[in-house]
Image 1 (tube, helix red, strand yellow):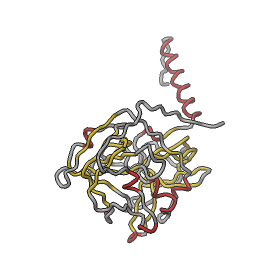
Image 2 (cartoon, helix red, strand yellow):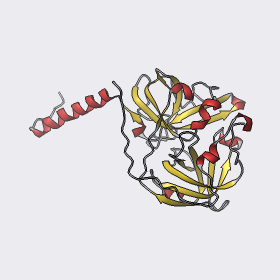
Image 3 (cartoon, rainbow, N blue to C red):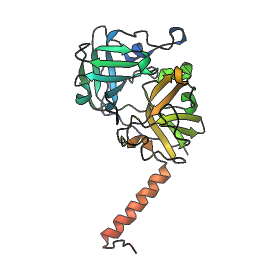
Image 4 (tube, rainbow, N blue to C red):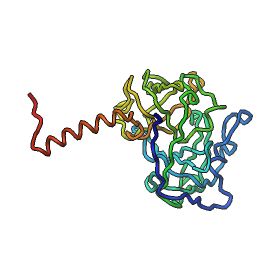
Length: 281
């Protein structure tokens, strides 16, 4: 039986118009000849067409992050934004389509292999407009094998095009934990292979813990959703991609588990309705 998850869009995307603005595709696209870095590196640019798929300050981190994705592109369609100065992170919500002006394209060694847009109203004059709201970006279903697993598993030729995009690894089970540069990576293994994930972006994670409570070895999921990020630190022999969960909702349980939980809740509510209350022995 084929399992599916339905997403319903609540608005039609109408990209804003900024003369000379780049698309996220323009910012992100790269190839082996260019060293897998943006051709607009170290430039201050305008960017249009991105829908917010993440907004918040990851637990324990200093900078608010916003991730936007342009649904016009199946590849090279997402990018992370670091907010250093300005109200972007406070003003936007999930599903807002935003246009950015004067943001810096960062591919420095400090980005650890990830292309960032730096939003700084003071340094770069960064600004934004919200063109529309209520958009839903369905995650792209991806085989774990495409993302890879291991300390030096990065394969930009097959994976870089999904950086910054919302993805789902379906029918997976959590495997080994305590992996990666910060010991916060874990395996997601399914019929399609194994990839690495992390909860460091997860807004429902306790800042004192490495993992979200739903991350347990051997626990199966219909799907685990997240934003893809690269982590590269060649001096320590790390070069891998990681799927970053955003909230508790990104852990999608097997339908059977949901049915079991609902049945239990129904039974409890039924007893209360008829005046029967379970008592501890």
